[in-house]
Length: 320
Image 1: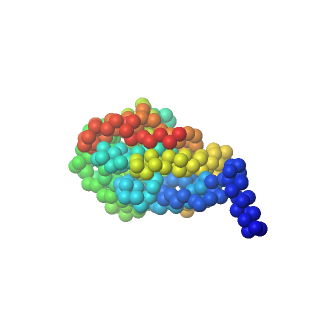
Image 2 (image 1 turned 45 degrees about the vertical axis):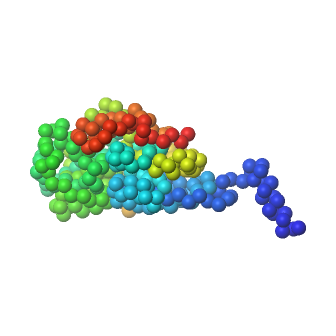
């Protein structure tokens, strides 16, 4: 009889709602994503036990490019993907069953309201987007955010994107590509942009900022997404994931210095370099809207990158 008492107590506690989700078996969730600063809140939530508290066993898998993240999620190798929104829109337009459920970053026309940049090395002699004609461009993937960004700004400057040479390089390796002269210009994000600017071998010059040339309407940039069937069947899991994630965002909202320290530690950067970079993520609501997706869809259609029409509301999965 004594052996039964703990079991009875456990059942009684469960009935009374005294046990947290983490007291029972953990739901395994794999997150595949690009290694950029926007993924750090997910890492922080995992390390601090915020996901465990919600009954989730979250494993984070680093992936080199947006299309590879799409493949990981659609194949079932990962349940959640983190990438820029453009690869997700491409995939959805090609009838791949993916939907965005969270957004980390947005771009606007406000001062310092951008998270992506086109840069060129000093030795390339490139001083403006017009100088990119016939040069070698480094992108983290074709059919992703970098391609749209180069096309947007080069079209505005009257320069042919198709006439330029392109190489595919993961974000962490773009600094080496510019330093060695394998590329003249690159599409970059933080922390790599600032590191290239202060590097004496590169002295990167900023040619353009923002994915879209017209930033008059705020648009979604970095997102979390799922395969639609898995997401609809696991809405409660996604709600618990978001609760754990919001706990991490609350930490960084209270202490922005902690976020910058994590950037320093994760990317092995000099604290002085980190102090110079853009790191003011919006530590607020996660759900994006169709209105914030539409400018990117318009941009993709403007350059003939979408093979089929796509409604912005068909890209979003509401989990609240």
